[in-house]
Image (cartoon, rainbow, N blue to C red):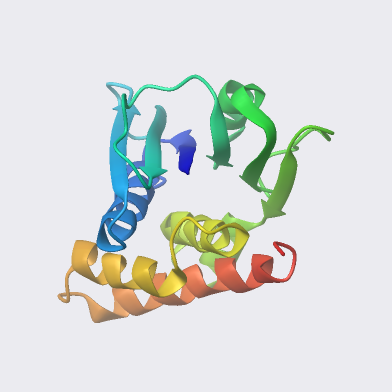
Length: 181
């Protein structure tokens, strides 16, 4: 089984971190993984996206044209990548920022990630809400593996930040755990 994921938004939203986190969790679960980042020269506020491929066998190439899942954290990311979600694929989008069009061909899941993160005092951690929602929607990686990977990536230096990010990941997971099955 091979799953192709694109995470898209603006620089400063933690798009690349979310992709690295997903990739590290998949490697931890002994899956084959590629992580391919792409961002504009301006970094903050410019377009940013990354693709993550997770597979149970060797991955031929990191470049793909269609995706099984798109996590959209900005309207521009949504407009650019939603048309490339395969039929039956999943769109996870920030419903507070994006008006996603209805589609018969994909499964859309909106979550107001920015609002949830802002309520915890960390609006820049909306990416953790989205990654948690992704864990709830499929069998890519387990939530506990994502949490362990987050501890590895962020280190143990700022426990308050880490604790908030872990809590936001759980909020994203719990918000979509009931609708995913």
